Image 1 (cartoon, rainbow, N blue to C red):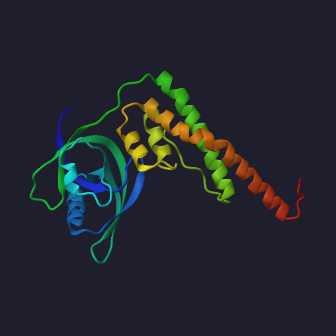
Image 2 (image 1 turned 180 degrees about the horizontal axis):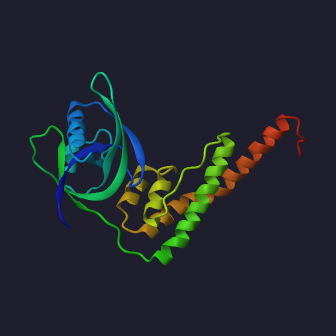
Image 3 (image 1 turned 30 degrees about the vertical axis):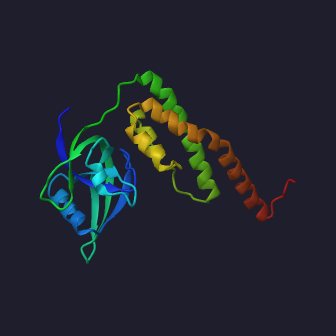
Length: 222
């Protein structure tokens, strides 16, 4: 695997491939990083670093991160910026390298999935999509939200990442998901979260709809 260098932005979050997130850039060193990235290929690497943890802990390498591609930038009058980035491919940090730049630069290598048969992934992916859509529809009903439910990728290898961006997973589970090289394992992980939530969410949605009807002159069935 060919190694390359990439600006590194340690953050207390896990960025997934195919997921778009907003970031606020305010530290001078990361303002410089942003300017450099915009002049080049608009890419930097996001690595999870818990709040209060020394950044030097990344120097040994071995962490899995995600390439962030800058999709948009809104520069503020005082030099800060609000940006939107999309997660692209994953990488493995070999080490931080010595650099005259004020921000971290990492030596990275690609981090890829092990091959798995599509015939095994498709049934899992179909089940995850169906359960997510049922929960999303119920959530929209409960909140009286007429917006369309989020779109999901067709690629089974990306599906779990997208679903994970919407569901309640703690940081260790998110890091484990990012580091998994098995699309099937990732799908099973998010499915284990979705499965017990479907019926309770749909029951709440039904109760919500009945309550609205009763509140407008409908007949309550006690």
